[in-house]
Image (tube, rainbow, N blue to C red; front, side, top):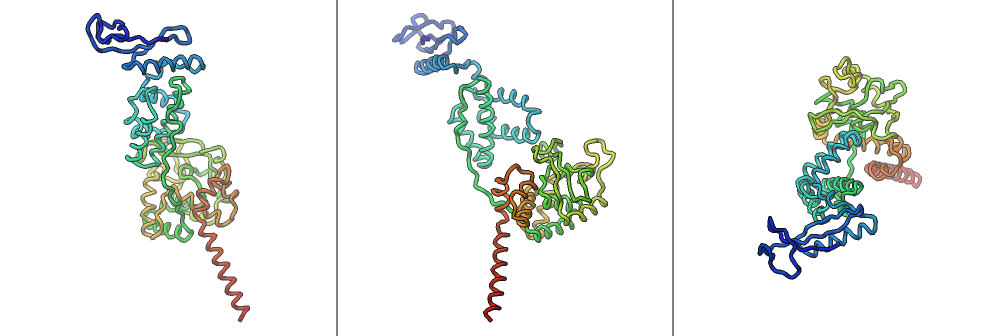
Length: 395
């Protein structure tokens, strides 16, 4: 390993002795410092720097890497992040769900590519990552900034695994924390009022929304239901597929298995939804003889296509406003189903099984706490009854 001082004038490039102020051959005052070393395979390599200190630090890093067995070819780290991302994205097709890839593509396009797409892998610094996170937070939100950081971590981890860089500079940066939003749910009375308002706007949407709220199904699972998934006599529905929109409103549809192995299951339905469901299927029969065989028997549809969440969501928001109840997002109706199940049973494990979660942690953290008022109402009712009876006894 050694550092060589060389003239940078085109056509010269000769070695310049230490201490010399000009090149003795061309008179130039512009120099570069070349770090020369031998890689583990015995091949001689070199790298140029403007400052002697940078060249010395680089050479020392290479020698340390060889000694510890962690040496990485510096040429691999010169690949630009956008080029590496394109390769990673191609490999991700088929390994990740289409909806996940759609979300990651948007995060890359809006936050990472503008800030770091042109940077070389080995030149990305912790400060660069922090700047990208701050820009994403200003552009959108803390939540989106966290999503951008997670994707960048994923990419740099893949670069580390591919022996293109030594370490992931984004690994120990804390995720931006978005303020926790309270999880809103409807009481049965509020839900019924909103459904009645929805009935006056778009009857076709009433039963899908009702089933979503009372069953605790994910919206992607609900819109994938087919006629052979419903057992009306047993009051059960089979969940084994998801149907999601990729690319936003007007995008493509993606069929996939249930979210997890535990999600592929049978869900028991309350009696309150069975009669409306039967009437809905008589009025709007399942799809038949469609161009797409995957849609054969689809329960909830419009104009020969699956229900789009955005269309139903707009109508549902209007119905909530008309009924003067909290305007809960369509995908949050699952919270209402979970909270009602807990209010009715008080059994965390039973609610977790109904939602097809592997344990009760998420149920307790997200769903149950949203309906804690039910416990207070019960306590108030007990207090009122006890007070009334004690008053009678005293009289």
